[in-house]
Image (cartoon, rainbow, N blue to C red):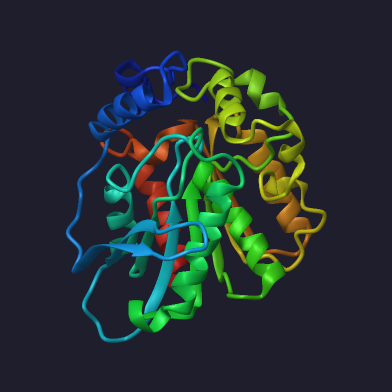
Length: 305
């Protein structure tokens, strides 16, 4: 189908992601611009900032709980998008509140280290350490360690998929579910949709290359499954997954292939392509109604935990 009229409005307001600014400059522009495209921010019963200790230094995070119930609840550990270079706890405050309320679960939003200041595997190490800390401190957070989900959009979807794989290998904690919103799953090559959706849809092919060059400057590292979860030899035993993609996303082809690989490995996997949508539609809920539909899919899966 053609691009959705609401998406066309968002593109008119935001345009393609620029790559001619320094990372520091782009963070300011990106944050200011995207904050104007967010939906309504709901209240939550409990929210606070925290700092999680790790071998790599403290990891800032923000915790959300939709009610003051004394019973332990499921937890979604959320990793924000932004090409491993952009995004913040503040920018994703609305999304995490909405997922907590609709999913009837706690949410831990993780402020992992970003490129180019910290290159691969810094973000991965932070994402894994944060999720392990949450599991180890389940009583403190009043969450059920058997019902921990990981999720994220774009770069955050990559980190969520990688954490799910690493947790399976280490056995240090259990991931019960993974919500992957248009994740990048393979930094080692291009898929046909890179060319098909190269420009005009907010995330560009050029921006993807720029992100990769800053996050994983050594091409050999892009073959590491911690950078490219698609390259893991076997996906058997992975937690159930919901993968959300968009028709006009450069990543749509690899999203579909990753979902198929999970399904072929016997992993319960729901794959949904939103027609007429573009890569960042999940964070454009102030102008794009399908963002709420994507939230509802994730929330329904979280409630089943």
